[in-house]
Structure formats: structure tokens, C-alpha cells
Length: 406
Ligand code: PMP
Image (cartoon, rainbow, N blue to C red; front, top):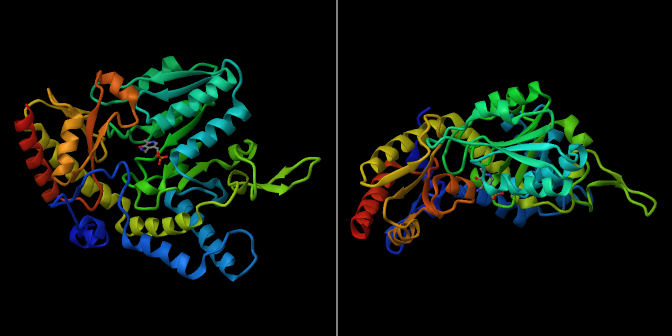
């Protein structure tokens, strides 16, 4: 399918503005994507027409909001092809989803001396919750390294896995290197030894078509805000039989069956893990983001973003002193780089003044920075609304700055 990018851009009016009197070039969608009108309108419609607290069944508006909220659970189930709707838990983001699993899986299944494997290319959100859990439970963290070219050394799993290994937590797509990891092969290897796998899909869901049953992932987590949805909404997919064995993460309303001072009983999944009033508006508007993405199709989006990636990589390589971190063929639409002799912060600040929004610094991935022995980098990342013309403008701006600063 050929996408009509000019038409798509019309759905994102935020892109049609000047920043410091320069046309905005938004190259930071891996941090958070912009939102199409359909998502914004849904939020507005909910607040204007039928806002009410969900699952309380008290009145018309609460019932309608509940129906829509639960409808989005069905949409997410279909989107990632999960077998059961109750395997979809709404959280406030990838970070909360991972913290939930680290706590709850930790309580249920981790004992002193057990081991958890993470990779060297993880976002802090897929390292720190495991470290906290390991400290609490007396467990140990082991690390799958990556090669300088951004390839995860999956073969090292043979040395890392032992009878103490309980879980592997790995990203589907790395937020710095862009590497698309062979998660299906990792899961197969892990399951052969009875080890569970959590896949961090934060950078994958809108670039790679995800089928959690085919992957056989035990947990798959992601955030709505990176896929055209609102911030403050995330998903935890977990296999039913595991979620049922795991204790609640937070206590409060909704997650209980009955409360008394003699003892409280818990609700069924997914509600057992959804204590308190959730982000009702965010979840309902997220439904529009999923529709939007399904309409474009993840496959067509990925193909288009790949063209942007290949073009931008070629153009960047023309710049003297260019270092690109992560050069795998299986790569998603992010490019992390430095220019020799120029501080990433200086470049990103000056790019901003030229209307170009990029991410700079440690990218919530200190272990990747440590791997390359750098204190910071610049990252550009693409979404379906970016264009070749924008890349040309960005490259021209960058070339000018490199000449000035070197
Ligand atoms: N994992 C990865 C790979 C990410 O890119 C991000 C977002 N930067 C996160 C986890 C954390 O996501 P959130 O901030 O939405 O919780």
C-alpha cells in the first residue's frame, strides 16, 4: 500500500507551524509521537458528552464510558493478536507495566539466588525495576552484551542461562540503536529451559507487526504515546495462567472482590491489576490511535519509515566525522549519532533554533553510552508523517552547524 503522506500530515496540524521562524521538523517521535486529530477529538468528545467514572454502573454516562473503555481492551487484544481480552491490562505506560511485572512476578516466582537476564541495550525502564526486584528478593542480574554494530549477541544466552534463570527481559526494538531483536528465537530458547520472557515493545508496536501468540511472549509491554495515542496510557499483555498466579501490584478500588478487616479477596484479571480510577479519557482516545494505525497498516508505515531511515543514513554518512551507533540491517526508524569533536548538546541546541526537534543526551540508556564510552549522543527518529524533504532540510542544517562548530 502506498501512503499519501501529504494527506497524513493534514491529520497532524501541530506539524504545520514555525519554531523560531523556521518550519518545524519533528524528528523525535521515538520519544513521543504527535497525535492525529481523531485522537484529540475523541478526548474532547468524551469530556463534552459522556464523561463518567467507569465500572461503577451508576448512570448513563458512566455506562457509556465503561463500554468504550472496555472496547479499547478488545481493540488492543486484536491489535497484538492476544488470545484473551483479560490478558490486556491498562497501565500508565511501559515503565509502569515493567514495574508491575518486576514486583508481582518477583513476589510470585523469584527466590534468593535466582537470576534474571536483561540486555545491554535496554532502556532504563527495563533495567532498574529488575535491579530493585533483585535487591528485594536476593536475586542476580546477568547481561546479554551487544556488538559495536548494534547486534545483540543472542548466542551468549547459552552461557548466561542456568538452572537459576527465571526470566529474560529484552527489548523488541532498541530505543538507541534501532536494532530489531530476534525476540521469537530468544523466547524459543528460553522456553526450552522453562524460562519466562518479557518483551519491551515500546519502540516496536507501531513499526513491527506484533503477534504475541506467535511470538509466544509471556509478557509484552508498550506505551500509547509512542503510537499516536495519549500519554499516561500503557499496556501490559501477560499470559493468563501467569497473571492469575501473580499477586496484585497496587491495592485500592476496582482490584478487589470483597473487602473486610478479616481479609480481602481480589478481583479477576485484568481488574486485579487495575487499582483505582484509570486514565479513562486516555484509554478511550487510544482506541482512535489504534484505528488510525490499523487504517494505515503497520506494514505500510514500517516500509515507509525504512525508506526514510535508509535515505537519512546515506545523507548523514556524507558528513565528515559522522559516527552512527547501530547499523544493523534489521533496524527501525531511529538513528543515534555523534559528530567527532562536537558536543551533542551544542548540536541539538542549535538544531532546535533551526526548527529541528531531536533528542540528545544519554537517551535513558546509560549502558549503551558506556558501551561506546560517550557521555551523550543525538538521536533522530521518524514517524509516518516525516518526509524526505524534511530530512534534506535537517541534513542541510546539520552540515551548516558542523562547518561552524568544527
Ligand atoms: N522502553 C523503551 C525501549 C523505550 O523507548 C521507552 C520510552 N522512552 C520506555 C521503555 C519507557 O516508556 P514510557 O516512558 O512510556 O514508560
